[in-house]
Amino acid sequence: MPTTYTDLISDVRKRTKQISLEELRRRMDAGEKLTLVDVREKDEWRAGYIPGAVSLPRGFLEIQVEQKLPDKNARIVAYCAGGTRSALAAATLQELGYTNVETANPGFVRWRDLGFPVETPPELSDAQRDRYSRHILLPEVGEAGQVRLLKSKMLLLGAGGLGSPAAMYLAAAGVGTLGIVDADVVDASNLQRQILHATSRVGTPKVESAAKTLSELNPDVKVVPYRERMTSANVERLFADYEVIVDGTDNFPTRYLVNDASVWLGKAVVHGSIFRFDGQVTTFVPERAARAIGMPAGPCYRCLYPEPPPPHLAPSCQEAGVLGILCGIIGTIQATEAIKTVLGRGTTLAGRLLTYDSLRMKFNELRLRRDPECPVCGPKPSITSYIDYEGFCAVG
Ligand SMILES: [Zn+2]
Image 1 (cartoon, rainbow, N blue to C red):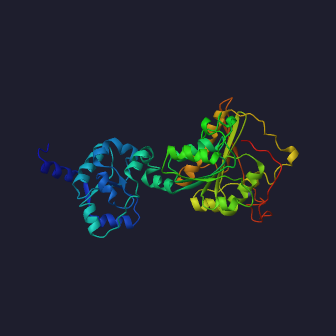
Image 2 (image 1 turned 180 degrees about the vertical axis):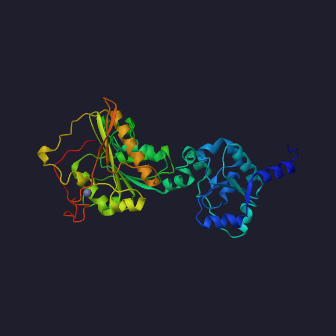
Image 3 (image 1 turned 90 degrees about the vertical axis):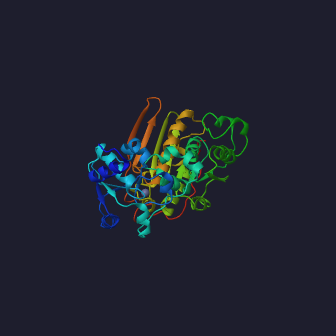
């Protein structure tokens, strides 16, 4: 049993395998699959770390290790500034059942002096670290993911039933720029479901009301209001700056414009719609968007419905009722899809239509297939310019 610090360290060094920085560099360059664990304090980490390392300060080692290092047989190399803390950490990891742990000796200080590659973490302010701490704790988001969200730009079509919950969660999540397209003013009959708005703002433009709610919720978010209706004349201008489109409008003219623009400009579209007690969501990921975000492509809307129905067959939706809460479910699923798309995490609803029946409380899924003869996204497109379809109603 060691009795002094010197004894303890020499005992630990005997029990843990040490590797030199040169060897570590050589193995990294050779593409060896290893998990680098940086056990220094957070402020040391912020000043720079070895590329690819996982931050696991020694003081939190036992608490966070299972979450951050789930595989107990992974090849782990721990490092600190000089090699002592990482040796102690490596001994602890072995006691916790990790079977393949090494420690770098010396550590990061020498690594930097040798001119070996160093990465610095993306910059978040202390206030942002605090605000987004529950995101940062998720390894799938982390600081890098949060910085990505803060740099992301999403366009919401409609500040109504679906746009409201979607906008609120996207703003809360720290999506840096939220464009909102809506030409309407707030009506008292909107307030049963359009939670962006308030009784005191009946009669004011929805985009203004939305901007007020969202900037109070999160001042990190830049809200860009577009008080206009989408047409073939403005769709490209509206889409140009944004990477993901969250479509909460539910009318045929807009749906086809959004689809054609998204295919031609390469934007992912998260589409939601609601009717009475039922809702549905899917994510359209055209080929070009799929390449940009590194996710699989899926069908476009015209793969499913090449042309809108004739006006006399279109559902008359002007007076249709809707369970207000339904908007919360569908709009929030849309926001989830938009966040995943930007982060490049998980599997989107590309190629799947998720349906929700609130009365029976059932979710179902329909497979959507790409049409090789699609008039827009197929190899020989027959539609190559925007079409303004007229004569359909819209659900608010
Ligand atoms: Zn298509």
